[in-house]
Image (cartoon, rainbow, N blue to C red):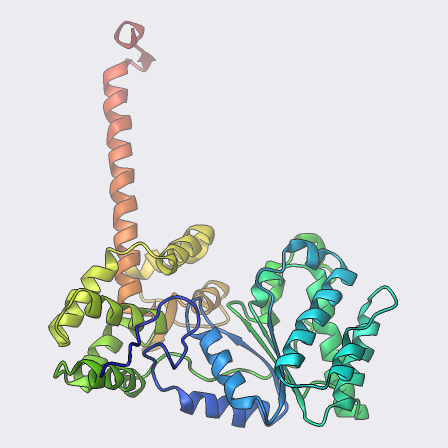
Length: 393
């Protein structure tokens, strides 16, 4: 009997209702190498790269053993990030809801949420200390979608408070969060690039305590195969799961959204679960208008120097040495567009490469048509360098 699961390309994947790759080894590595070592770190990867799904899997594994205060900054609204009192009040409310879900005693939650003064970061600092001291279990803080708030000084002040508490925990034994996990597209340590000019003069990264996050969230061939095996158990297609997984990885380089999207297309369009079927699904997805492709093109348009770099090797065949400290290369990697291949810069996967190439060709053709129209108009309406009014009229 089929499980009723589907391939998911919107929001976090839930094991009970979605076909999912088995990424338990990655979750184990994050817990072992970061959380159990009391690290503060950022999971920064491109959009729709499985960040929120990974955070949810971590939450499910950690709850019970730890108190996990998890929240998202998405949907808070810009007003919250414009006022210190409003921001801290929202943080306390979200924290209280999470504490309730963790089964924390109501008296502790009431003390956490109770306020009789204007809220400032020293007040929040003390509340965090009191909360973690009263807990019978260690407390972990997870914040998703911090990109929603990362372009203002208030958020920097919040990170600065967490940094100070981290340092005082090490040097003075002050009680605070065991581990802090921030999730975003941009690396929090590089937020200077998103600050307004008037804020940059005061910039001093408040997140230089963060451990480097090296866990690859891209899906490997065996991880993709685990998802296909679950699907095969339901539908008995007779596919060679290893071969199909390998072909999916060939086109996507393990980009989670692209893997799931190809599988979803194959299922819905009733394509064969073979190499040929994957090839056909790749043609379908390239014709699709989705938010991920929109983001890729938008990022090239909004960052002209990055676009020029991509054009140089993709259209003109120039070999560009991969150096992550190059701002354009670093930005391209962070946005999921660029990767390293044999010490040279390349597009991160074949699907992105084809989509970007098609975009450049389309723009070039459009420019050519405009140039031809301008030239034809010049020949028609201009005579001896002067506008021919008789022809115009």
